[in-house]
Amino acid sequence: MRIKIKPIVIMFFIVYIFAWSLTTCSFVKADEPELNCEAFINEKICNMTKEEQEEWFWELFRSLMEGNEEEKPEVIEIST
Image (cartoon, rainbow, N blue to C red; front, side, top):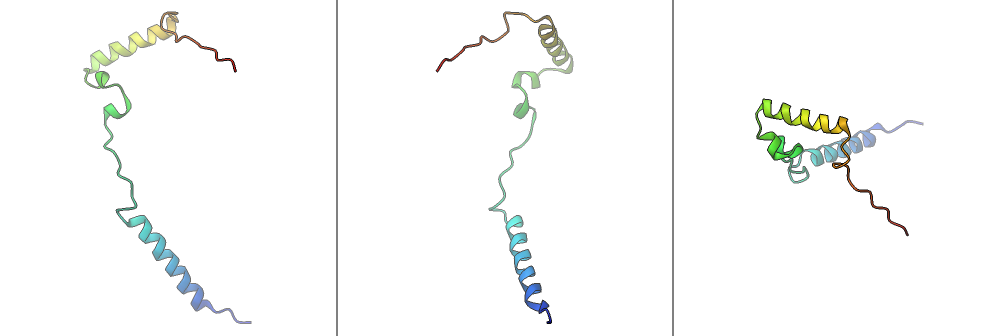
């Protein structure tokens, strides 16, 4: 029995061109937002100088290491 390769090759290229066209069309691609400091970090930290940022992070680190009870969020238990 002989395998007919011509229809298989034609179908492969049809599927390949279809998949390629979906990945290259501009209307299918999502608009990617501009990534800057404000997208990930609080804006006031981004506007600080390097020295101010370092001081702010050290204050944050000290408060985390000291374990201040004032800064811990209150836990609310919900009973069902």
